[in-house]
Length: 170
Image 1: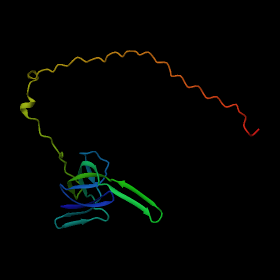
Image 2: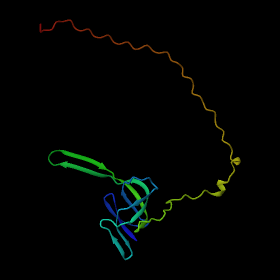
Image 3: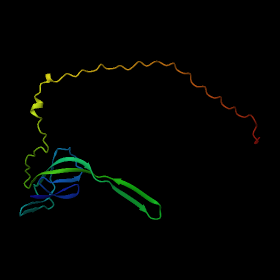
Image 4: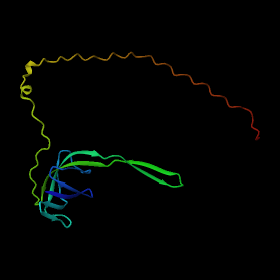
């Protein structure tokens, strides 16, 4: 079973457990999403094409992480005018994993994407008494700052006297 979904102005052909990279979506990493703009659903020989979307069809997805695309250099110039501008761009992206395709709109409960294995029982059951208590070293106090006598401000050089000679304008 596969479907064609629309998100971010683009169309993606998806199947269960596919990983796709789409434009940035406002969702936390690890959260579940419902993509409701399903343009087509195919289940074996049965194909449902929407006009523009298939009624009641939804696709469930989990946000794996947010990332950024490759850097694209945008170069503008005008000939014979000495006009050149270079600008870089990186697109914000979201990595999705498709969890379920439901042509009738009823999604199955999604399982957690990554479960951490339980801690080893031998390590978890060690009593606290066996571990030696760490002693804290007494905190060292900063040495008292010696108050320095303020130095007198440097004397300014005397200003030059203006010349008293009369100008030639008079």
